Image (cartoon, rainbow, N blue to C red; front, side):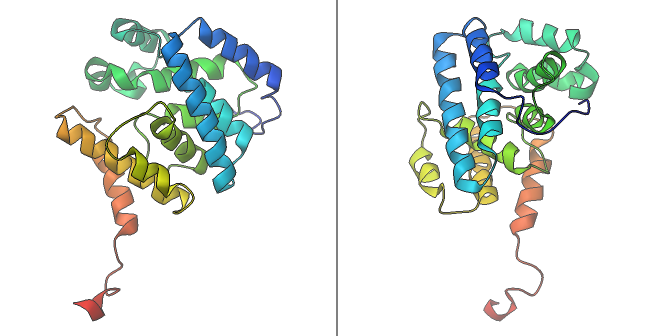
Length: 215
């Protein structure tokens, strides 16, 4: 990412409205409804957890910028943006469903200097996550899972956790469930998934000797 002002001043109402109008020509009506749900959910989560609401809304609005492309189109997009080496050839070939995150971040960053680096990073990480997720990264990741249009087994449990646990715990619970779904459905995992999982599990593991009295 290039160096840029990381404030939200460039994310004006007019700028966001223009990008939303552009999205209407890039994705299906159903996808646009999902995007709007993610943006609204991200703003609410940001308010709950003390994260910049405008950045959260912008990240939600722009996270599926390239989702209108089919598998062949998104792979070509990766090549056009020169991202194949950074993403990894195996991921490009085998996991096209995650590629819209890095391509969106790259394209938006090049086209719109108004978008803060923090927003671009959250967009880049919203499919696979990362070992060092920041607050905005977590807000977008969770919002993408919990927006009103989503319906899955533990959705009510995860929604009920909002505000009852801290942001990192809410992210972990959400990530945990998506890992479970990948295993249950026997889907391929991104090469980074286990490393990310282990990082967050290790943060929650009791320190040596902490539970000694209970043993």
